[in-house]
Length: 562
Image (tube, rainbow, N blue to C red; front, side, top):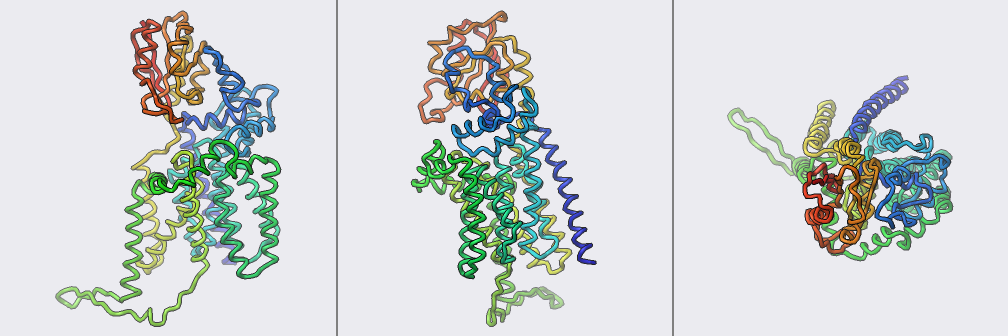
């Protein structure tokens, strides 16, 4: 009866925490007012009807383009609802498997002609909820302590890392969910030494879902599968091996059968990113620099930009315990007039026997998996950005919480006091993270930028770029103008005369901010700066005055007038 009550209480506590965390995430989702260009791409690839990129099919051959093309690209038009074949077609022309986009298309299809951040955020909230549940379940496997599983759940669940993953309308929250389900099932097999039908089904679903979401799932699964297979081969449990291989094979085989492009992209013969990944693996010279950048991403999003300092403190705490309690016995005693430090050689090492508990080999598997993925992804990721290791953040939080848990239990023998100390440490580190950094994908200025474009909607607009894809970053603004023009920055002299300033005799000019760099994103030398580009437009149009309307991650917006 007592066990049942304890289990019921655990469920009540878990549900209460999840409820608070969902409210916490909804608060940040509501704060999101703008989008990173890749998020806009998510909507386009999900909803544009057999038209993966805005520049395809000669859409940008003319200097003047229809602003409506952006709305058509981002939303589902009447008669194009639930066209999942279009989603798969678009993804064969892009970089990722289609599952995330299929879910986004399904929701968008229920609201034809409409665009909303919630079409992407609501699924992310569901993925987040499931991720938290499985992180809790993994925590229960790692430690028998009834409190431990709540530590990583709370530390990760309220972190900037989690906020970024939820508010970023891409496939990384879905990928994280599949990774946590996959990891939990494997860790459970290691403990239970059995594979029930429900476990087989779970592995099939997680393997299929992960491979159908992102290719980095394979990188995550690889070290876990290697450890699992090695462990089963050592035990010579052929029946378990057979079930395990079949379950993983069915899940992966179904994903490949439904989307054969997976094979091309995994082998480096597919899209440009897969080719770049293979090339990166052959170059070892910049590996240290790549690792540094991803280390910084973890530090910024989870540890208040102090990961090196926290690592040193943790190592010192463990080393000090080993020195003072294992190798020697050190005590501070008061002799009536002064304090004395007594050092005695420990007899622990004379009859030493190390018990490898379940939490040790499970944690070893988690550390091995995290290190493998971290090192490989830091090298092959096309951009050195923390989003590519978002699926590791829950496991990193678990590792950190376990280290803190061990240190506090080493030094503080009273269980209640040690639990209190752990809670305080996690709260301090979590709070410092919000003090030192802000979530990355909220873009509070986005709402104002759209309002400005609506204010000048009757003013003609031109977008000047080094790469045409950057127009997507302003898609929600560009769709508001009555007349819209676009051109490559080196073609200004050729095409700017074709632009009409309209009735207002003014012109809104967007300029790709990559022109302020020495080279563009394709490695080509930039020959004109943003200011020179604007000045050239003013000279040709005769609009001598200018004012900056706003700037964002990809462009500057100006109004030029007489």
